[in-house]
Image (cartoon, rainbow, N blue to C red; front, side, top):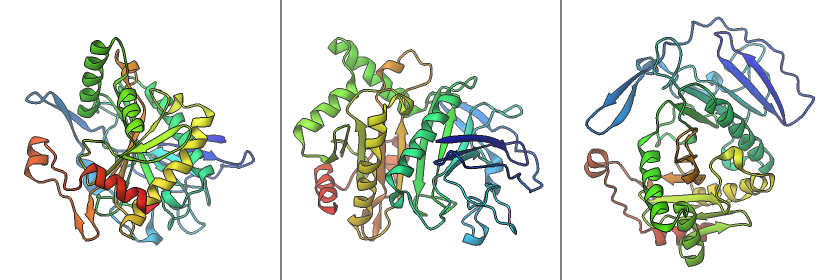
Length: 347
């Protein structure tokens, strides 16, 4: 893989990840752009010990443009986009409308956009295993580099897909948030993992849960020599799957060559099962849970991908109502064992 670092017209960083060593990325960004927005405000909610980012400039971000106006497609001689090249494999750049930023007097952090392909009409599920490997290597690269920034505590890689989820751009892409704090879910998982380690003489909580799921098999959807996909016993979403490596590793950069190669085929299979479930594109969130960058409990982490959808039936969505939104107590209409059975059949 060839890595080429350049800058956009307003000074934001752009990185090409090419599958050919002879790729040339010398085309400049021909646009005239205003400076990037000032950093977001981070406000502390003392009532629940959590941080909230206030990013007023995001009100002006691009919203569901026509394909001819897509900012993630390659540039052409007649139109310049966020990607100056006329073609690309995988490209990563600083978000023009970031939720987190260390510019100016911002609260810190960074947000990046990951373009999986130049093909506007594709989806992650239509990528080749080789392209998935390129994406995974790009995420590993960004996890390392972003984790070295001052004040960054965790690197979160994710993809939102479908207007039902709230995407604002149709082009196949994901995002990376470099948080200047530990998010609530990470803190909760680390606290549970710490208690488990203290009770069991240092055992890894997620590794033990994964081993139990693999042995029981009832909620396992798919598996290969290095990865297992299963529906969690306490799944919050109608269709939710964890995809985890058998070897406990803290983050994507720690995956070895065999694990990286084995990820693409099983993940593509899983996405295609989701789409086949109701014979229509499934809206989903795909979220990588990585260990914190420098927290003392980093060794308690276990890398895993959480894939979930808000669709609970062909014509019905799950909305976060009072119990979920106000109290954080989820009510799932689809038993996890039933969800696993349906996903196995969909394959």
